[in-house]
Each structure stands twice: as C-alpha cells, then as structure tokens.
Image 1: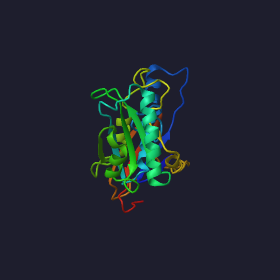
Image 2: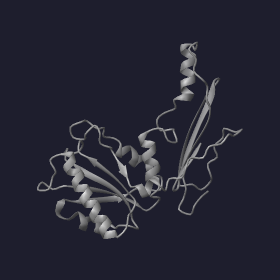
Image 3: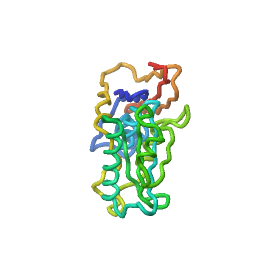
Length: 235
C-alpha cells in the first residue's frame, strides 16, 4: 500500500499471519509483532496519520497561526470559541474572495489554559499581516512555518495537534479535535494497492528526509517507509 500527499510518500508492505485460537502465548506474541506495528509506522491507521497526510497537502507553503484572545475578548466556553471561528472564517473567505484550503483546531487545556485557535493556511493565500489584520482586536497572532527546517516532517505538527483529548468540559466529547476544509480533503489521492513479489520499499536518492521500520520473524514480515521529496519533485 502506498499513499501520496503532496511531497510526502508513505508505503507499507507485509506478509501477515493469521491468529488462531490454538496459538501459544509465544506464537501470538510473535504474530502481533507483525499485525500490530508501532503507532508511528503506519500509512493511515490513526488520527495522527490522517492529519499528517492532510498537512502534507500544503507542501512547502504552509504556515501555522496561533490565534489567542485578550482578556476582554476571551470566550467563556467552547461553543463561543467555535462561533468566533465561524465569523473569522467568513472574514477570511470574504477577504480572499473564494474558498481556500485550511485546517483549524480549537484548544484550551495546556499552557495558561485559555482557549486559542490554531490555523494552517497557504502562504499563497494569506500572509501573516493579513491574518493579524483580520483577527483584529480579538487578541494576538503568532505564526511559524509548517516545516521548520529541512529535516522537519509533517508528523510533528500532526502529533502536536492531536495531543489534547476531548474531556467533556473544556473540549466537548462530541467535538472534532481538528477540522480541515473540504477543498483540502478532495486533493488527497486514493491509496495505491497492489501485490508484489518483493517486500523491499525503495527510497529515492535526494529526498528531503526519510525513515523506515522493519520487522520479520517466522510468521511473517512488516515493512514501512516514508519520505518527503525535495521541492524539485524527486520521484
């Protein structure tokens, strides 16, 4: 299985064993090493995986904005923050004059425990001065590149965005921890599936950064690799 998302490519190949009621403790343990690889070695298994792919669709022109509230404009509850976001999103769309790609997240449990909003947007759609102008007197805006350095990966921000669980108080249980625009979701290509005689996952030369995880035993094998292509479009 291979999944592409912008410059990110994730791939896994496996010969998977089947569990049996007759398996010994040892056999079941060895089989699970193949069937249950570490959480960070899967193409798309967790919410972090799914967010990582969507962040990668921003390529090398994504910026992460942190929108904070001053004391005068601080919302009292989660629904109030969501209402502020919806008004702000309307302002952004009106300013841009068309839909645009974004991911947003409402948080409120870490740091000084005040509600704040994270927004990921394309540099070609907005510059920091525009975001600050439209956020207005609600509070302050901080910005940083989605990829901080050449060896950085989208997964870092995906893990950060997924660090807070819904608690039913600050963040309602029914709330989605992060939300992305429909226009962004539509850009994710379908995963590629095929049967192969080789378990080797080739990583092209000249990629920006890469990583892999491999495990095998008498019952099967699991291999996973990822890489981020350079801006020149490494295949």
